[in-house]
Image (cartoon, rainbow, N blue to C red):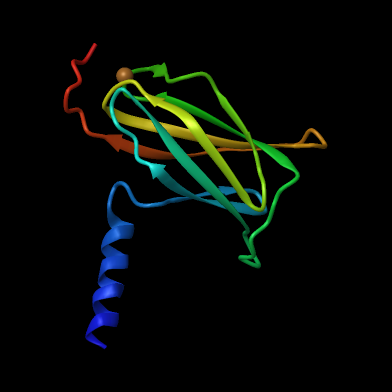
Length: 136
Ligand SMILES: [Cu+2]
């Protein structure tokens, strides 16, 4: 029981942290965000999106490509060019997300279905430690 409680507290604490996975809502599907390689100033991060049906919560593979755009709203500039990935078995992986500096990043995710329908963007924020960064 004590172990279970610790695990639950750990889960809650983890979800409340700035670097925890978040969800983005894209119409009938939702994507859970996980950084397999966390953002670091001056480095490439790896982000995994796992898609599930918003009502059934089942893993789904939308017949779509996923686009990710990075911007820094406080600085008024974008990050690396928009990245595109395909979805395989409900999962899309982006491994070219370059975080050129610390600060508040906005990650915008959108789906472009094969039939041309575009859903999104839906965005989430990621606060990256400023350390080592000389601001422009
Ligand atoms: Cu900036």
